[in-house]
Length: 407
Image 1: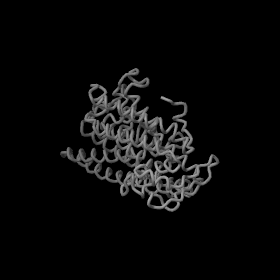
Image 2: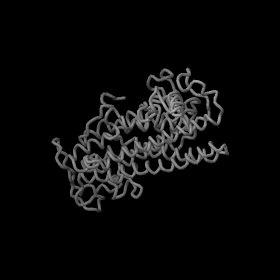
Image 3: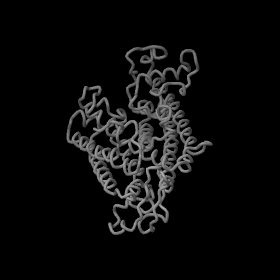
Image 4: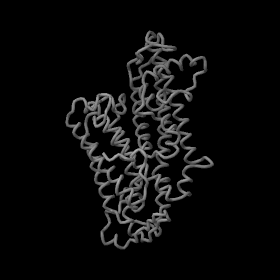
């Protein structure tokens, strides 16, 4: 709910939320004509974000996995029967685009269920920027053989770079059937000499295993959030509201380390990278499906939803959308909200105007390259506000990933 669109006179009628350094309950008595319920509390904000912003995205990912499972089965059947698979492959890739879009929105909302234990669960689902196509090729062969080092093959015991969305993308987009390893060892010995269809079948079979593991991990995420005895949603909604506000506020800092630095700054050459502080296509996310720009778009969609409370039914400026923009307004810091929302809109406009894929823009350094640089500048405006006025006004702790980072 973006109250910056209400009149200044109306704002003077709103009782400011009392934000104590001791973390006491925060509330504002305001009439519904100002976009607030009779009691605008931290708990109301927390509940809205958990139930209306975060949970639907988890459900969307589960649904996208189910659709992916159906299209993959159809595609693999055409491989096995050696019939034309072009339309089935297109469907698999289209479903993957939707699946990745769904995940990229969850990516922005990395709280304890995904981040605990050094982001163990997150990395089993999506390990980028750690990727290893050779490791995936090895596990295609190990899966076909049925064992690894004398033990039955079990993907749950394999390293993160051998599974997850990264591995699945490689399997369904890379049409080069020659393995990517510099050395042939173990089950991979002689794999390049297998006939083409056998290699396609083995890759498809392993893609099924990867997708099955993704479903297991998605179910695990849902259990941790919603159905476990200590379900995380209950911790947020029923526990200390100041702690929950801090957690939800810190999630917004995905825009800093991950978007600004990892997804944009690293490939742009603003940090030491594989190309030595130069624009570097090798650092771009989603090399095979070329979804880096779409991923960023979905990251910003999720950021906007988490910041404004926007849902599929309620626009950001709706009375029913309760977000951090309202909270900032209520404590008398509407300027920070306005700066963030303006920069966010500018960033989304820049993204929508980029015509080539990220890697091509970096290689050619064309007009799209300049738009990506401008995008980075707008994201920096957002993160500068988060690291200063946002955390000060709402008493949100600066995450470890952003501590000491003033670039």
